[in-house]
Each structure stands twice: as C-alpha cells, then as structure tokens.
Amino acid sequence: MVKDKIAEKLFLLIALSAIISLLLITFFIFQQGIPLIFKAGASNFFSTQWAPTRGHFGILSMIIGSLMVTTGALLVGIPFGLACAIFLAEFSSSPLQKVLKPIIELLAGIPSVVYGFIGIVILVPFIREYFGGPGFSVLAASIILGIMILPTIVSISYDSIIAVPKTYREGSFALGATKWQTVRMLLFPAARSGIVAGIILGMGRAIGETMAVIMIAGNALKIPGSILDSVRTLTSTIALELGYASGDHRAALFACGSFLFLIIIILNIVAIKITGRK
Amino acid sequence: MVWRIGPKTNQKIAFGVLLLMTVITVIVLFFIIIYVFKNGFGQLTWEFLTSKTHDMGKEGGIFPSILGTFLVTILAIIIATPLGVGSAVYLVEYARGGLLRRIVSFGADCLAGVPSIIFGLFGFIFFVIQLNLGWSILSGGLTLAVMIIPTIIRTTEEAIKAVPHVHREISYSLGGGKFDTITRVVLPSSLPGILTGVILGVGRAVGETAAVIFTAGSSLGIPTTVFSSTRTLAVHFYILAREGISMPKAYGTATVLIIIILAINFIAYRLMHRFMKRYY
Image (cartoon, rainbow over all chains, first blue to last red; front, side, top):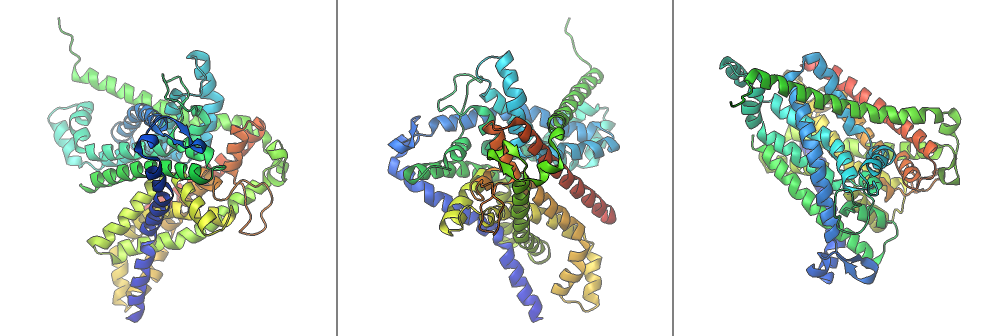
C-alpha cells in the first residue's frame, strides 16, 4: 500500500532526529571552538594561564581539575555503586529489591542543583571544620559527584549481574561455593563488560556535571595542591563565563566545550562498544 | 600460625560490608530529601506559590518560575514526544538490523550521554544566536527537547517490544496494513510505557539547570509569549543558593522542586509497573 510506503519513509525521517541533533551539536560546538585552538596554538591552549580577554587561553589547570574531581567521584562511586548492585542482585530478597531499586533510581532524578546545595549547606562547612581549608574543594566535589553517579553505576551493573544465566549460579553452588565466592569468582567476571560500561558512563556523567560542581568546588583558577584545595573544572569555566563572554573569550569557552565533548563522545563510544559486544 | 579466614566467615563479612554500604547509600538519599523538606516545608504557603518574585527573590513567591518551568517543559515534551516515539517505532517495527538501525541507535545512545552544559552551549549558539530566538521559552524548550529525545526513544522502544507479536499478526490477518497495525494496535497497547518515557522526560526537563540557564535566560517577569525569557524553578533555586540571596526562599524552592520530581518519578514508576504486569 502507498500509505505504508509513505509511513515507512516518514518514520525513518523521524528516526534520524537523534543522530541529526548529535551532528548539529558536534558541528556548532566545533565550529565555534576549534578555530580558536588553531589561532592560539597548542602551546597556548594547553598551558595553565587562563586570561581569555588578554589572549591567554590555557585550559590545563581546568583539565587537571576535571580529572581530579572525576577520579575522586569514581573512588566514591565505584565501591558504593558496585556494593549496592551486588547486594540488590544477589543478597536481597525479592520484596526488598522491589523497594530498594526504585529508591536508588530516585537518586538519579534529584536535580544536580539540589546536590550542589546540600554540598554548600552540609558538606562544605563540615570539611572546613574538620579537615581545614576553604571547604569548597576537590574533596567536596568528589563526594557529591560520587553520590550523583551512583545510580548510573548501580543500575547498569545490576542489569548485567542479573543477566548472567541462572544455571551458572546453580553450577557454582553445586560445587559447594558460598554466595560471595560465586559473586567474586563467577558473576563478577561474567558481568565484567556491563560493569565496566556502567563505570565509563558514570565517569562521563562526572566529567560533564556542571551546576553541582560550580556550587561546591570553589572554582579557583589554579592546579590544586591537595584535595582540600579549591578547584575549577572545564564545565564550571564554561558555565561561569558564558553569560558575559564575547569574541575570542566566547570562542575559548566553546573550545573548552569541544575538548569536553570529544572526551564524552569517546567515553560513550567505548561504553556502547563494550555493551554491544555481548 | 597462618590465619586463614574460612569461606563461610568470608561470606558473612562480605554480606555485612555490602549491607552496610547499601544502607549508607539509602540513608544518604533520605537524608538529602528530608533535610531539604525539614527546612523548606515552613516556606510553603499558598502565597509563596502564587505571588510574583520581588527583590531578586529575597521577597515574594515563585509563581513566575513555576509558570516558566511549566511552559518550557510542555514545549519540550510537545516537540520531543513525536520525534522520540516515531524513532522508537522505526527501530522496532521497520529497521530490520542493518546499518540504519545501528546509526539511529548509536545516535540515541550518544545523545543520552551528552552532558547538559554541552546542550546549553549548543542551544545558546544555535537557537539563541544563529536562529535569533533570543533567551526565550522557545529556545529553552527546543534545547530541552533535544536533550530528552533519547529518554523517550529508549522507554518507548522497550514498551513497543513488549507488545506480543500475536497482536500484530491478528491485525495483519484481519487485513490491516503495517501503518494501521502500528497506529491502532501497537501504539495503543504500549501507551502506558510511552507515557512513562514522557514523564521521565518531564522529570529531566524540570530538574535541568545548565541547559536552560543559557537558553531560556533568567528573567523574573511573567512570560507573555514563547519569545519571553523566563527563569525556571531549578535556575531560580540555583541563583538563590549560589548568590546567597535568601536561604529560606532557596529551601522553599528546592522543596517544591523535589516534590514535583518525586511525584513525577512515582507516577512513572507506577505506570511502568502496571504496564509490565500486563505483559510479563
């Protein structure tokens, strides 16, 4: 039928919306940002001096800042995320699972500004009081980001642990293994690719998070000497300065965006490849 | 003497540690919500919800932000729903493997992982500047629409997949064409699943800050057209908290924001649950 032929073409056209959006985003971010990187030169762009209105476009301290808070977030998020996933999948009864899973997924729904706010009113004063320093720090950002990436790690790891065939577990129990031995030696290796994908996606979330980080990281423009020092990430720089930037300064923010976008896309592709291999 | 922990003890230790860590996670979640509620509930008066904002948020209510959030979100949903649902229909019903399917799927997965600040940058340069829509409800809605398309695609895809194949075959056997089968059989039966995706999209849109602050702006006026700039609840809350304008008002706004998000998630969860029960 003609109607069906037209409908198929129409659905195909609609289905291309996501990839077209992605291409548009890529095009506009790069078109605005890449020329400045060439104009400034790599040695300027990857230096530590950021004074974009005076021709210094160095983003090195922000790259290091982003890496530090992301690493910190993973150090907090991975152990807790994996523990929750394993506990939910293997150690909890079905009614408990039904309650816990949506509760943890709810964490994902809480807006990032709320996490940032909790950071400001509770975590920052706590760190200032008990550990010293300004409070607005790598440590504060790492803890809050670690909590924020938990749901990503939990839900993807949980799904891949659950997906391991039941017979594997039965075989292991039949050999006299305890539950923990089964988890450690059998389920973990079998679900490895899903767990790694979850961690990579969590990492992408941490690198890309903006509002919460701005609120609690302090945003000082220098390479932090310790985890109690203030830190500024790529994302914070963009959000803090985009409102008033113009000319080369704005282009420099898009250059930061291009760099960030490139990292995120690479992480995404790796995660998609890993999960797709199954 | 070498101490060796037996597997049984090991198991007990592992269980204890895992339980402890899960409990900590759950406590942290509840703590965040309860802490905000405890400080914010007192602010929730009819007046706070329905009056204009004065003095940059130090005084008055949050009505302009509630209206702004509503308008931006509705616009995003109106744009993203047909695109997301259509894409999902294509993925499940038309694409039989092949390169196109992989491209569409890859697009959705990648878009889902793009951080909101990148959407903010894109919306700012494309909608606000290139298309000259300015800081407006329209720019904000369009940017959010692009952001929530993947959420709607993924949830709708699962919902459509869950519709038993027999339903389609019956429709074909009655002489229904493919398009009729999709619109009259597949989509109606997957409606609750689709709604779940849309509601989750609403949740993301309501809580979003970085993508809307640079596209919808932060004007506190009551919006009159889609070209008016507006300040959504999340943006208002961010500005109140970060600039320390008024902590009580910040708590109040956060409470409203969290209540909306909790309600949205609860509805989505219930819908999905009922839908799944029907087919699994």
